[in-house]
Amino acid sequence: MKKSLLIGTAALLLISAQASIHPITVNAFPQVDKPTITSSGNDNSSNRATTPKVLDISGHWAEHSIIQAINKGYVEGYPDGNFLPNKNVSRAEFVKMTISALGIEVQESNGKWYESYVHAAEAAGIYKAGDLEDTNWIQTLTREEMSKMAVRALGIDQVEDKQWMYLATKNGIMSGTAPGELTPKGSTTRAQAITVIERLLSAKKGDKLAVDKYAVAAAEMYWHKTNIFTVAEEIFNSPENDKYTNVKMGIRSWNINKLTVSSPDKSVVGQVNSLTAIDWNDPKDPNRRLLPSKDKLMLRIGGKQVKFTDDMKVYVLVWDSEMVVNKKPKSYPMNRLNLIVHGYSGNRNGIDRGTPFFDSKRELYGLVIPKENYSTSGELRISIETISLGAPLYASRLSTSIHTR
Image (cartoon, rainbow, N blue to C red; front, top):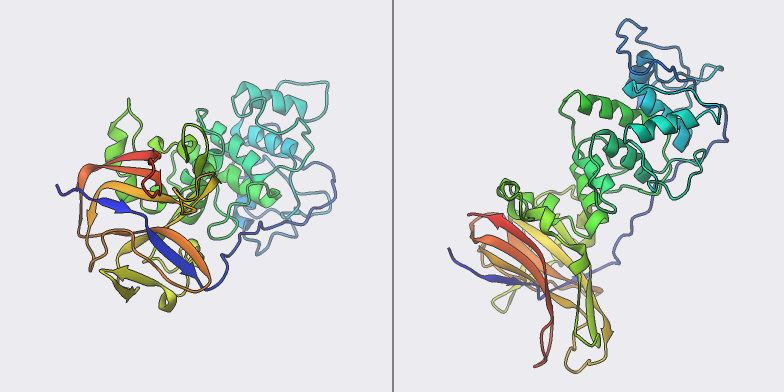
């Protein structure tokens, strides 16, 4: 098959500053008595009342999950008749709810009320020392901490740093706080905690759960600074890669430790900050905010400027890199790295390699990748390299994917 190199020399200039992502905050409630949770666990009591008398959940987004949780008996409302779905939940409260919901045996303890549940979680592999920044169990639970316990409860324990939220979203256990937003360090409410536990129970029964694809893409970015294996999955993470069990292919081959290139004497060092895939054909893709409006987005093809059109079937890969050390600016004049995709050949009205985009405010770099009318050599390799004027090139391979086309 035809081989070609896609070299990321495209410049993308934005008319306004890149939109920033702000965590969605939840108002903290004063610490009150822990929720009443039965010790019988998930008893599947379908004969319980299906409309518990709680005053403050009618119309709440998690109403259905809360009613299910109360009916199953692992959580109840407060004595005043309220449930307080938006109240922050502590680490201890979440552990107790999870252990009770899963029906895990708890040994009596003479210590603090939650210690027996923590011991049960450790014994069941749901919690391991080091999963939390500290052992203050009455501290408000963060969303990332919740993802760790939920993923461990699924029986997954071989996890890379920051991969927890990816696995939780990929398995449908968690969703985003807004399209494309995760808020890993954000607090967890009672409603959010119960929703996650209900999804966990469904997953363990083998139910197929809905997946928030924007949350998965954001979680992949949080994990290893790219989302290409989620957004452009059919190209860079096709099922062919799963056949290789002894060699890491596709998403498993991406190595965050190789996002830096340098000369042997460290006089020249470049690093990758992010590689963001944007689905041009998805108007709801949250990362489209990184791009200017369509009328401001230009391709340079064959020396001509060509406007983007709605019918272009492409992915836009926005490339953010920089030279963090450059003691040889004459030899390495560009404050960025090249992005290269080996083994890919596409053609969509001339779009077959990185091309320039222009605006007057900001400059980004990347590639335009056709979704159709392309071929591969069978193996796609993503690499980075320095840009030099007659000086040695320093390169690093980031991933290898099998994709026959």
